[in-house]
Image (tube, rainbow, N blue to C red; front, side):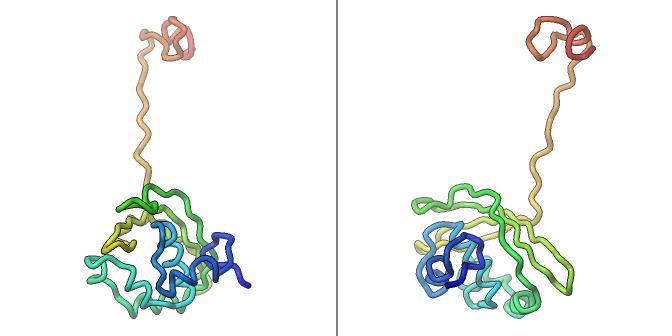
Length: 160
């Protein structure tokens, strides 16, 4: 028994193999993991079948096959999931797929969106290299009360 390429820690036959064989993915994350596994096995038909109707119109099967065949797949890291459960209609999965292409190690970082079409999870769109919102800091004037709550002026407390 071999481990599943998706990195779930389960065997292939207990993880992605049934989904690749036609069993609907229970969650958005399970679909995303099976799509990664489809890349590692060169199953471009599955990649096309698991796209939303809208996304399928932009799908280039030859390009996907070329990527699947020429890359050496090194692993998958799921960073975050939002929604996408068994009872949800939409969800998102942030992941990083590691691979080597032409001897160069690369990472594909994406925030992927999923939704249900006719009861089955499908990939709709993705944001490549998602960025967090910039951190906002409040500038405290020297003569304003210190934000630490001491009751002193900022210049006599934390601003000293």
